[in-house]
Length: 463
Image (cartoon, rainbow, N blue to C red; front, side):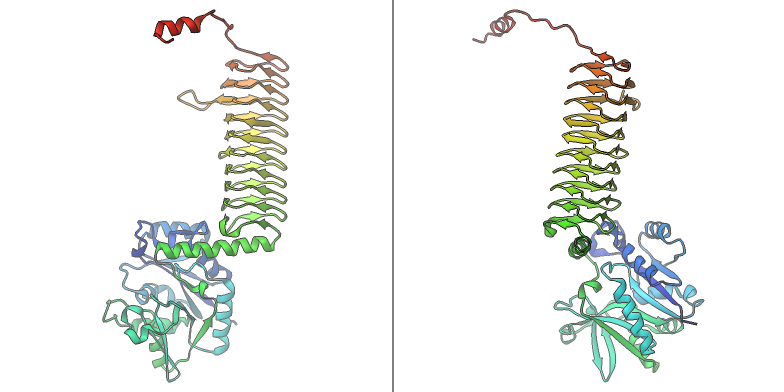
């Protein structure tokens, strides 16, 4: 029987350098909390057990992780006394496991499945008792240095390193695979640092070697994958790397992205082939865009579904809505949550749609607000039309049936219904239902007062 592999995710750190009330591993990168990426790697292995060590902000992390992986186990590190102490917090759970343990840090979101897979395979082939990942950095500041002496490894943390050690550029990535039983024995023997008083997990490398056990390292040249996030600058750097990875995957799949340096697409967005994304767009998680769509510059799309052939013209915003095939939106259109636009709908400049449905071929091309409305097919909404849906206490519905024609500058005072094929005269305030094929019109009779302007100027003393 193949040995089981379990995963511990260290997610208890306070992240003081982030200067935030949010737990460090919960800060988003690529539209997802950074711990999400580490959790996905653990699940992909697959891991027989996933143990998450929590501390600061544990409620937020536990709630998030348990919704995505209900079999995760949680242990609490009472005080942040170092990474070895974090592992010891999971002693009870680890003591019941057989096989090996992969140790990952919750603040390393750039790591890929392939790196962990290759690392694990090398570890098994080497028949070592402990394996750890190393990398060589031009600027290794902040990382533990890897020193090799007489065929053995010594890891010295930055805070404990002298000037000679600090010049070493090979670093410990903080990712380990260790036999379960051996991990517990070694962690118990870790002593606090003389400088910081913390219990470093790095010390288990020397401890396990002192037990005459084999230790091996896996060196990666892809240094981006092992970068930890400790401050906002590192967060921004990781964001840039993840974004470029995502754009490269999309372009490899047949999506045209004109300016990758100025296009932002979060990690779980789906875009079909032959679609085009122009610069300065921000497309957020939950969004699915079909084939042959065009997203023009400056648009923001969040948690929306766009079917094939949709054109989103510049500086439009779409949130939590469904857009039908070959629809055209914008420029400067805003589609608010819970809106459904059917095929071939046209929404023009400075039109806002809120919690409404529009049928096939319906058009609202200019300067309109449509809220809490159900609109049929082939309806024409004239410029300046407003559904007056809020009476100060509740939102009221407007219904416009198929093929109705709404004249410019109309106010539809909800609740109100406009029947099939009906017409509304421009500049009307409609407060009553309009029957099918009828003309609804509401205007005061026009009066022209002769010479009024001259009399007014004289009264005010203007020449």
